[in-house]
Image (cartoon, rainbow, N blue to C red; front, side):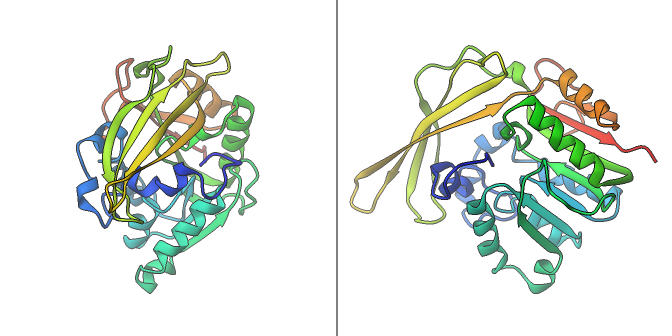
Length: 278
């Protein structure tokens, strides 16, 4: 999650409805067709595969409310999660209170910054940055610092995985006024809401404004509108590869989705796997 957002920011309050976990949501109606376009339908399976291949501790950077972290911990994997948002971590801890004790015992979570998280060097077999979490770091310098710290935390022979949207499939000149994106049920209130979303034009520093509003319908039929605004920084595949190499990691593969498809200009994702030399 982005730094500096208040804990009651709409993107935090609506997070579990906007980005439902296929293995953690209690509202199956939210698992609609849009989650495939969002990149949520199959990513857990891919992270599970990688974590199972390189056995050891796993660090998730930008763990949010545990959409990926909790299912992997249920599998028996020792998980550490960090997120710069205290609001996100608070929601994750509330979720963990409902998990089995054996799952909770495998999870450590912290409010921390990817650039400066002081974990033990070489402690993790796998480090994952799922679902555009890397894009929430808003400058190339800070993204580079986060990768440098991740390389330090990774054990020799370990893997670092970054999963971001492919900028080529976005409206780089902006998308105009907000339009309905999807309709979901708010897990907190049980009310139906519609998210209206738009993008501004990409800037020279590769940042892009995301904005819109939520319309939530209450029991009396009244609509409650809440505006939101965010910024992310897009990264292109060659740039991301060079950043990995600059921190001493070897780029093992660049995939275009969660099914191991080859990356291309029309791929929905950049799913990059890098390894730390032994």
